Image: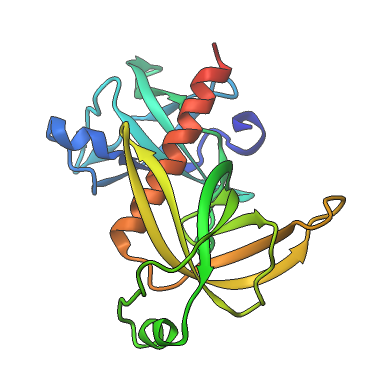
Length: 239
């Protein structure tokens, strides 16, 4: 996709991924530069960023989130620096993509297709009142129903079940994600945006749910899980 959407001269923003923090890099720092050349659909050259006429020597094997400012809009991906050299008197970094290139969505979250077991139930009235007051209160020990998440994002989930919630209802959902090899249970509250029968699958229903009052840390962990899964899938498909 690089060769279709990204061209030499396009502005880019580079931001290190979290793992570089242990190596002394400032993961919050955003470096601005330009695409020097697009070598293939998964490799490109980027002019080495500068600050006050000083070249910034980003580390080889460092992984960065790249945001491309193109004529067709904003695109983003993750990529790893595999080389640095001088070309036609310009110092360049060679990046190899470690995730798919996708449209950068400023308001919406990227949705990742998956198959994840989940348990859920509708909130009780007292729980709804607590949510509306921006408080945390869940009645323990209530029966849960099985469902399967079919896509997940930092903003919500889409799941399939053999029962249907009413649109606008508030639901409790619990599922497990694995980050850095560690499994963690997530308990979230969401609002049902839609519920409809699944085509050609009688008795099954598809729900779209938007998180309500989701904490910043939990949201960032969910997004990290999505990016890590994308990288894993890309690595496996290239073998």
